Image (cartoon, rainbow, N blue to C red; front, side, top):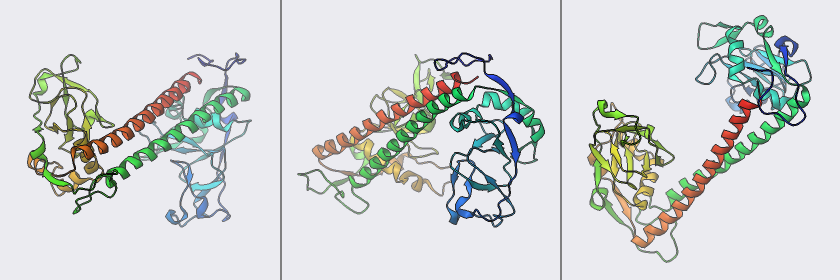
Length: 390
């Protein structure tokens, strides 16, 4: 690893400087004197002020530290992303946190946006933590403060910090904005699914397209389409060769309402053709997707040769956790062929089915578009994060 990042802003050419953490931070343990109350309790993991009514601590004065904006706190719970734990930077304002989290305060000129990301670089911080932590005997690690402050890392000058911090902050805000838009679209889709189909005991939906007034029929799913229960091939015939047959076993093979090829097989048992519907029948039950390929069905799924209307109806059931409630009480969460065949489905005229399907498909397309924009932004940020730091 060199002393310069791979991508830099124009005008910055010098090496990043090797600095001791003790030259950048000091350990602080300012106790709360009663000035800060429950409304200033900070959730360290997610860095936000908690709802005062949900703060359970009765020791706001004696068992809390004051954390100021710009301070960092060590959250020592290891996970898949952070081997030893991580630092979290306070960018929301002065508050109080549990004394279980040690706080460090910057003692040099400091760009908050830069350090918010710099202190979470696992490639850099994990080796530092490896030399600085002591096990607490439970699921959380503790820092040896002297060892930690004696470790070194590479730091750019304040002007380059500001440039990097500003760029990453703008990207993060755009990502948050797209996440909010995406969540609103998904909520809109859920609301439409509830209102475009009749509720239990009803024969017409809450909202309808103009010109449609007839009551809907109720039919068993097996009376209007073909259902294929999965049968797993022998595991000896599984492959990772995309030229073989795509195998769908369960939820792991589905994403955002589509089949995502993950495993292949040389053995053909039960199949569903392109544009068929996949329904998971083992835990987690009730997840629904469409397939853009002919696939082999494992025993964790069923194939339904239905149209877009049936797919949207099954999505409504998924949102309502219909299949989960049907399988509750079982030792192993699952549904069987009779559960699926006997499903009562509300059926309007072909014309009304088409209208409903077109509307929901359009919403799906908009959701997919925003999901892809979000993923691209996240990839850009990830790439910059890797190339703008050393």
